[in-house]
Image 1 (cartoon, one colour):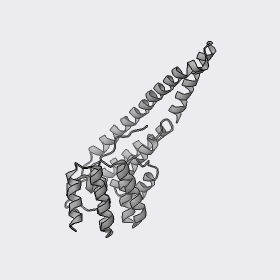
Image 2: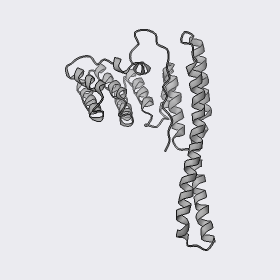
Image 3: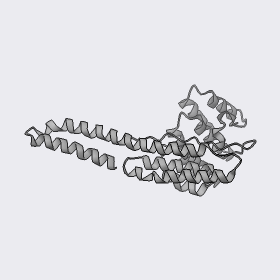
Image 4: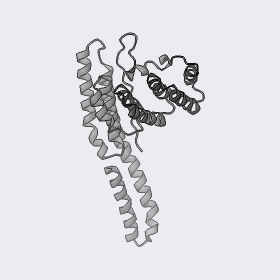
Length: 246
């Protein structure tokens, strides 16, 4: 928001100065607009770079975890969350950044099984963060809030329609709830949106033939949703979305 106001103010000042110099007000509109757009892009980029620097610190913390030391993992996860929380004020400067930060916080909490904390963060996350929406859907599925689950998955497949895991996880949850017709429709939409995705085609064929939907094709990302237990202990991996804004 602050970036927008600063850019708008700069554009208005340029237009007014040109008017005071004796030119028609219309003569100042074009340069004023150019200043507004250019400055907004520069300031937005600056906010983005600051968030990227924080994300690099978060990745460094999470990538050095000892898989066999649960206490150390929790300490590092807590530190990563605190780093992100310290970046929340960036949201006052640039639209959408606060929601992105909340999404990253929610995903970390989810991976460490703080589902209530994760849900609190997901509720503050924009729908464009499709992986956060899928995790939110997974929580709602486990709470048997199937209506909320479907709504969250619809956001996930809308904004992550090229990510086969979003569609497959959606269909898997529907199948667990014995809604095979809905699962078929979801997978049909998935194949229509991704006609070259052989994994989705295989999944659709399996469900059409009343066979089990196997999620092996989407491992290890599938395990991060926590809907099935891996066959053996897996190290926690954090695959955060790259933050973006418009």
